[in-house]
Amino acid sequence: MERISKDIPNTHCEIQSRSIVTLWDIEENREHRFFLSGFDSPIFTSSTSKAEMNIDKLVDKLLFSNFFRIFLKPTVIRLQEMDRVLERLKLGVEGTHYRSRQQKLQTKLELFLRILTAKLSALNDVGSVISRIFDLFQIPRTVLPPYHLKNDAVNLNAALAEMTSEIEYGKTLLIEVQDKLQECQIHLRDYLDERKNGVETIDSTNDFQTNLLSIAELSIDLFVEAELLKTWTDIFGSDIPYFSFDRQLFSYNDSDVFDVTDDVVLAVRGLTKNYNLGKTTVYALRGVNLDIKDGEFVAIVGNSGAGKTTLLNCIAGLDTPDYGVVFFRGRNLHELGDPAKSKSRLLEMGFIFQSYTLLPHFNTRENVALPADLAGLSKDLKDRIENLLEGVGINQQAKQYPATLSGGQMQRVAIARALTNRPAVIFADEPTGDLDSVTGKQVMDLLKKFHEETKTTIVVITHEQDIANYAERRIMMKDGIITPR
Ligand SMILES: Nc1ncnc2c1ncn2[C@@H]1O[C@H](COP(=O)(O)OP(=O)(O)OP(=O)(O)O)[C@@H](O)[C@H]1O
Ligand SMILES: [Mg+2]
Image 1 (cartoon, rainbow, N blue to C red):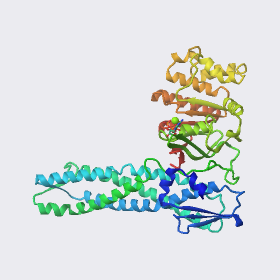
Image 2 (cartoon, rainbow, N blue to C red):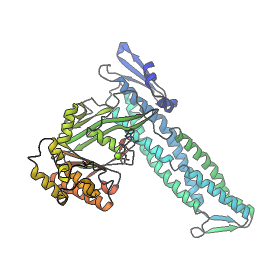
Image 3 (cartoon, rainbow, N blue to C red):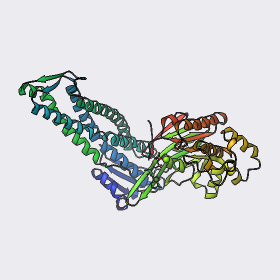
Image 4 (tube, helix red, strand yellow):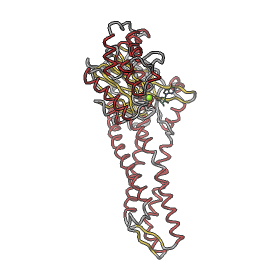
């Protein structure tokens, strides 16, 4: 216990301030017992011996589950309450609209409507924090089952299943709340717009107050709920929680978890990569699991910072993950030595980058021939290089240097170069990022044509839907994990 608490990062302790996980090490029985404060039956016992399981990993996953248990209930309650108040507000502002003939009262009403709108707009970001946290839940859900805990694990698994459906419910609720939030903001903005609403002008102060009483009373509830919801999500700050104190976290050794069929060219399990930036840590990959089949054309899609490039670099052996495994054509890529890894990249992988990365002092043909030269194959490939130049439509520019080519032409050179050694997989990171949309489309058409002709596996990274639509399968990334949507 002492070792565990010492190793837990401070930020983690802060997030977990409401949560307690205790571990007993019961030597004589070769058992471990856990107390998880978030669960209704909070005690669990592991039956496997130390030799068979990594206790640190299990504790980490329990911490994660415990966090969700503690996070879920208040979140769902807050969303339900918010939904209820917004529904009432919606009904209120959908009815008759009033304006006062007395300027003073009218100014007060306008101010009140503006404050209400501002209060609601302050909640616009809350949804994204909650949904990002919801999405992370798939990690404990997929990693806990392999640990065969004792009988009381039945309770744990039941609780996990319950949390899964609670999250689904929470997600639906969140969408409803977000929709109502938008609707109410629009209604409030347009409240006094006579072109959109039948606005009734009232002379008497009393009548005016009576007519607006229900909205005024409701606004108190709204202010309270908005504050509670905001305070609740503010606990998590700008980043979302992460739990890690074990270097082997999320690595997969259990054979029952790592089940890969022969047609899978790339199998990724529990891939994790953190960047330490002084006091803060960027969790670029948070346990990515992915299978890419031989011959697939896949797009990895996600916003800037989602971890797409980090993922690609790790699965192509250009970067080393902190934990997790990458099986490339049946071999554990990161267990290969550097020379073997380089050889695999040269002969089995082709790369296309946003910035083309052509050698400036080599002409088009030389750039395309480069992978073959490096592999000592250029003689056999002479004809092939001419075909490639023609295939991507740059045979006319064979003797030109990169500086004299357009962006589209440079990317064509890069594509031809990626194909030179007949790779098993082509990795393309934002291949159209620096191109205008027409040229970008031509480049994607070229890749698609190549895929149709050769059935080479292609992994394209993009944040543009149009580009992603070229692929047969789209994989969504968000906050370092793959999300179902
Ligand atoms: N060398 C690095 N040092 C520190 N942080 C890094 C490093 N490389 C990436 N990151 C961080 O890791 C996260 C994921 O970055 P990554 O480049 O993988 O995102 P991306 O999805 O490719 O984004 P983009 O669409 O902008 O290219 C980001 O928060 C980024 O700032
Ligand atoms: Mg990137």
